[in-house]
Length: 253
Length: 269
Image (cartoon, rainbow over the protein chains, first blue to last red):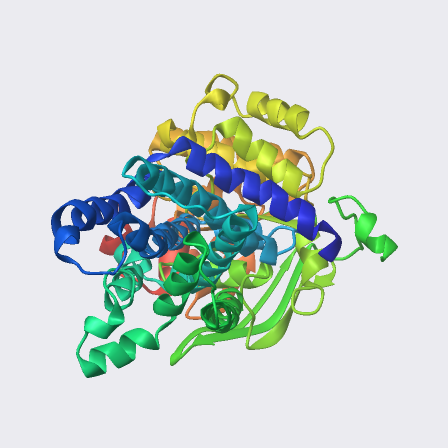
């Protein structure tokens, strides 16, 4: 069965990508909320926020990108949930295919969909005046961090996708993830926050990831932030993957 | 890599019954669903597993299709043990579940091509076109399944199950929720399957469906198979006095209800 893993995953990936290409609205709606936040914060609140940088959109974009991913992965849970509901999941499981290919196809589809949303959001940011002097390597590093973050959050999304009892349950889990950036350095510097909030903000994953991406965009030294960011991403990935596989096993036993 | 892996999807294996089930038990938390199911399905026959809602029909099928593990008991499909040779069982079977397991967003043809690819068959396009023709779906083949009627969906579902010619096919309540016309379409499809030598185990709560399609009928009640035989054999189970009393022969419905002990009014339609 292992011999077919790549081939089967590719066939199933083709299927999911076709789903996306036939309902591009899921990608558009994914990008709409972060773009709305970006407009709101740059043109309404931004003037009153003191970040110590000349351009607020430059300051804001890293956090907006993470919000984009957090809202994008709820569609992964949604698509997986629909497969479980409709019976096609069981059809695949009763066929002589590499069983884990079914999950991997959804995970890879999530990566593709999120990359498209991220490109759309970056495009809008450029129109709004986002500029970065970052070189190719720095951009690749940003892309790498964002991909790893997407992968980690996607595996979180797999858990409700497999175990949810309703459509709402399958996508509601992403709300806290969407709002996590608000209590981080994504919108305002953390040193403006009161003690306990600040302590939380400075020790949650979004701050480290946002700071690392921001440093890469502004050609500043990334310091230890990038290692903290990577550690968070890998840590979340490993734990989420473990729980996702466990709920998958429960589902097929 | 094992050479056994390269055999085509159609696994021609062994002698003996296509499905052999012994002492199958399954509980979900506190609820005991199966209390020792014994069943043998001869090769090339259509066997109907008949039972009320919640009798455990779907649980039996899910265990046989390697989607669920039994607590105790053994089950062999096409000669392979469902617990220890799951991969070989999956090569031998096809499952059409209670809800049409089709991809709504893809077209009918794309659904068939998808399954043919996953069964690693050559010329998936040609296989798809042939099945569309066989199930009178050629015209609808290029349309998204979301636009199909219930009967068309079921036909596509069954067509997907035939890809790779698996020797054993499970149909779990294939006509539940279909209108009479669509039911007849599905019945014709199932009969055609059996003509080709495929073993079919179908579950149903419709007595006329079992009567129409099945060579043998097994009645699942309270977690056990309480009767297993041909329609004629089942009819003989009723006492002769009853035959004299009523004008016509007892229908399968009478047999079923008297065996199961349900009040008549509930099942009459």
